[in-house]
Length: 246
Length: 291
Image (cartoon, rainbow over all chains, first blue to last red; front, side):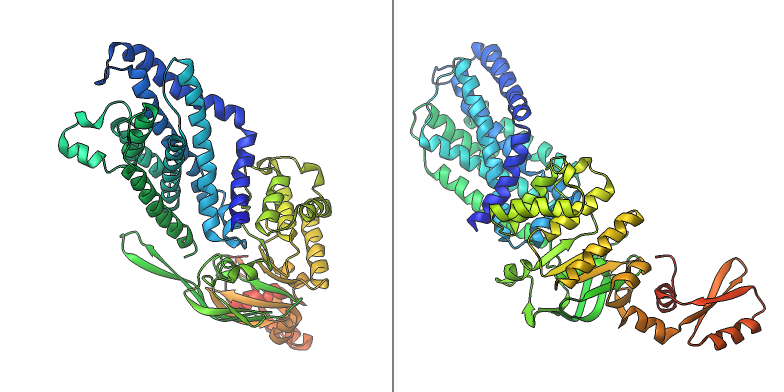
């Protein structure tokens, strides 16, 4: 099983190596814009409730939303492997464990998510942000990447066209990017909306990353919520993958 | 080697009125393919050949029926199905390469998926690409190759792990005659070494030239199985062909005298020739549009 997972991961690693420079450069654009606009620009005129710098408040949120977007969009390439190139059939007919494909693709997307997070960390320090990185911080980042990679995988399995994939981005990822505690605290939202938003995984990631980065106490219940999401989306994605044979 | 009993596949889909409908792609198919045999599935487009191969290679779950390899019942959901899959080499009809990888990387990926060690992978990649005559493009992206080259790499990839059974779905489609004959030669050599080959084709010449036995299928149903020569002998060695209006007609006869008598009775221009598998195929399937 581990060898099979490595094989699937190896394929994505080879593709990433081919495009590493382009990948890194393209992943710098959005964080730089966020940091300039909300950190230097708008951020200088904003004080957080705790009286700290908005840039310090912002960086964990940017990392949460960026790792979500990168992991999700890395793994949806499986859609092309399924619908257009049919290269997914090479895996389905080969003697590997079916779950190895799902896990290998997820790990490759996690790697991409972590590389882009590392870029943001470097940029944020360059912009003068102050935040703490601990092993728990990194674990939360990995979990966030894995959850959204699995969601991307399940979407790639169920969705029939690229147009529909764009709709997932528009109706699910984009609202989460702005509302799940990334740019402002969810406590400022009306109760009904806040309760709904606090059910979403990105809210828990934002809460955890910000708390750890600012040396505050965090509830491990949020880690539990992310783990629960991971298990659920893994089961959904794996079932959808096996259903391709029907 | 491969035994198929009452295999059927029914696809469910939503029709134009958004109501559930069904289409039977393979209908109660039974086959028995011997080890080392080149077995052909011959049928027009849409006759269920590809669906049959997809079920045999565990890519598609049959609706009903059973598949046996070496007498062992195999189900797509069996835990030990991976052992059986290790025996398969598959040349699909569509060029299902990983377009982001080079030729070498595609071959390497295949070797890894079939649990080959590094040394064997490297040796086989060089050996096979040389064998199919595309070693000069080893480091090229697959997407940049010509159609003929892609198909040759597809065959090389399927042979990477020395499969015992080779499934080839229309392997020579869209290839020029020289390449096609080279691939036929390759298939014969593999069969001589003991590889069992199941080939689907709608090229009659290919089936006649290559196959030890042929199953003729149409609308998902098996019409008959025999050797190419057996079919010809049974249905008639001679053909009387004549033109009626704008289209050609033909009739099969077992002896030349009978054919000659029939031709003289005809009130139309025509001639006599030896029959081939194409005549048998058209006689059995009753349609020409798939050819």
